[in-house]
Length: 229
Image (cartoon, rainbow, N blue to C red; front, top):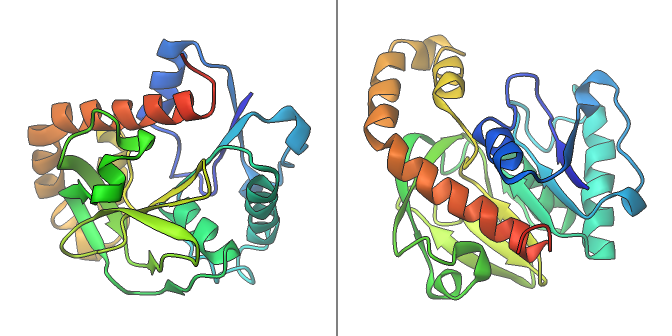
């Protein structure tokens, strides 16, 4: 079973839920912020940990993060294929001993990311190309942990993706959003609400390219995890 860990009620699996249903890949979503317990590792073949408005250091305000951190560490210890998205990627970096910087290298909007030479050779980016469209919505960013390999960068945020070991990945960008999510996030605060229509126009213009790259990344991860041929 593929497990999806949702850390925030407004940060769901989005189009990735749609893709998994299309591919008929069994999955379960757990909501630890609502008190749901994470299942035993023996029931899991792979894990995707989603983002959230909180940061990795906000455990006092969001106590469930301690459980999620322990879960991420257990996935790495046992070799369970892992994909951490935004906060999920920051949690992966954190449990591996890397710094997660608050209000550093932030980005918002539909923006390009380029794989590094190591990324071009990595199975996660097979068929994605030398530059691809992402959606960014983060204020914090991670450092690359010791033993990690930088796989992709952007001009504003050099550390976009890293791999640790054979099958654990952390991304700073969001490959899972859909138009509804973009609209919701853009209206979260007065700072961005005044530009909500601009965010949507930019996303609409590049949505086809965004979906193509995002689907490819998910499909590649499912192959890495042995959940798709």
